Image 1: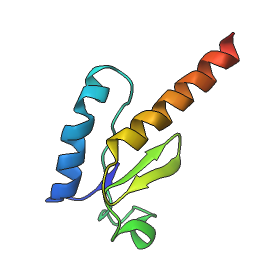
Image 2 (image 1 turned 180 degrees about the horizontal axis):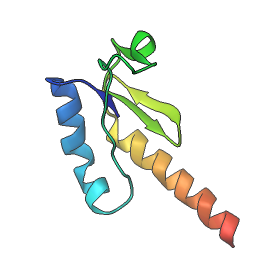
Image 3 (image 1 turned 90 degrees about the vertical axis):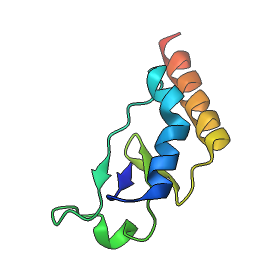
Length: 84
């Protein structure tokens, strides 16, 4: 998740996905968009929080928990079908 210190939308989003983190369905890594070495600063500096799943931007500005859960379900189903 691209974030920055003091981002209340980001903190709210983390609270909303905490049950997914606790269940092991997602691993949340926070990336400070304001760090000078962050190459995505110019792209997403006004769009945080930005969630990426498997390297692809999936959601920005506000978390849609239902949409995120559907996306995770689809990914998990696809992974299961690969192993069957």
